[in-house]
Image (cartoon, rainbow, N blue to C red; front, side, top):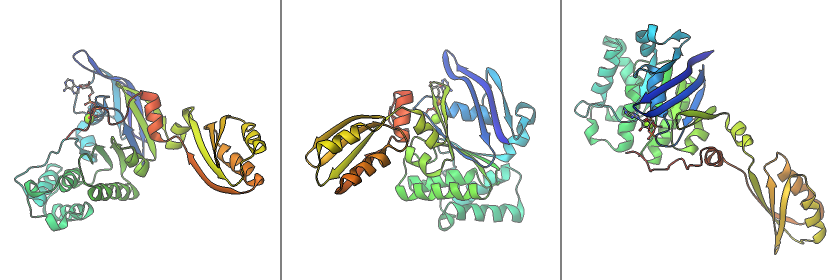
Length: 315
Ligand SMILES: Nc1ncnc2c1ncn2[C@@H]1O[C@H](COP(=O)(O)OP(=O)(O)OP(=O)(O)O)[C@@H](O)[C@H]1O
Ligand SMILES: [Mg+2]
């Protein structure tokens, strides 16, 4: 079942077409990675999904229900981690969570125990009684995430939750995301970092200029682009015969010898690396292998013509 379905969403800001007929489903139990260059519409898509902005056309369903008619119930079951940090600087970590939990109607012993669990989940239990003004960037990010979790949402939406933090906090956040997903939370994870998508996402959506331009598993997306693969074989005795055999492999475009190293440029077809290896092994004396496969970064670059971090990062 789909936890959310955006149907042909259009959103304009003045003359800017921020969402251009976006159609997207988020399946129950998945971690969907949402990627796109700066200004491509990711935050706008999230705001449309949770009903924070009015859309110009289209329809949003969440938990199988019409969003507009069920806004209060839907918001109660969603957690939103905002791109900009939205914690109270003058309240302690615990007080921040008590405040956000309270908004969702938690109180008394239940609120206390949910706050304690959430602090532990994000690794801030030792900092509970400190104010975020004293926190590192990573700790603030973790508190920002915790604020969206106290009420135990079924569907968690994270808008660039790891911008500007240290690797240790990043790993902690990624582990938290995986743990929440194991416990059954559906997650929409927006990021500029391809490594994060590769680490947590079961499926990826790429948006550009307000449109969904590709979606699928990482393997499906990589398979979509006709990319060249570079294979470097180091052999003990390179021979003209071996070079000829390699050239005859279907999809191989170029074979070059540089000393003991043979450079092969091939279409990224499944199996060509294996074929080249077995040909080289037959000829005897295969010393080393180095292959560069297209990555999600190549997919992104091929589809959007932009590097993911174009325009730098937001603080
Ligand atoms: N409140 C607003 N008023 C006017 N234009 C806006 C507003 N919010 C967003 N936009 C424009 O809509 C487009 C999409 O912006 P959005 O913030 O959704 O992109 P994004 O993918 O989240 O970018 P980033 O990676 O920088 O967070 C951009 O052209 C942006 O300038
Ligand atoms: Mg954004």
